[in-house]
Amino acid sequence: MYNGELSQVGDLQKLGSIPKELLPSYKAMLTSVPKQRLPPSEFLTCAFFKNPFVETALFLENFALKESHEKDSFFKYVVGGNGPVIRSFVRTFDRSIEHG
Image (cartoon, rainbow, N blue to C red):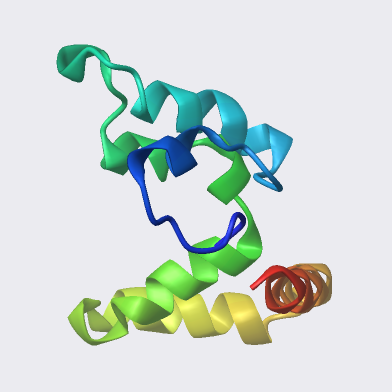
């Protein structure tokens, strides 16, 4: 996504335009000792992904699996005067389109 197509293993070491906030976690995934590698599930919990866009996208991706009360809470949160959150979501979405 940030560095274009990866055609060989060495391309993984090219940091290119990977956001600085992601670099420690990204590098931890590439360590040569398998037991020391950061699992992908932990990579997704780094601070870079803690934003309204990602959290909303993940919720919506699993929307069909959510319980009724989870869906109700989500819609109340979105509709219930959370203007700054929605504006942040839109700004983050716009930035993702620029990079993506």
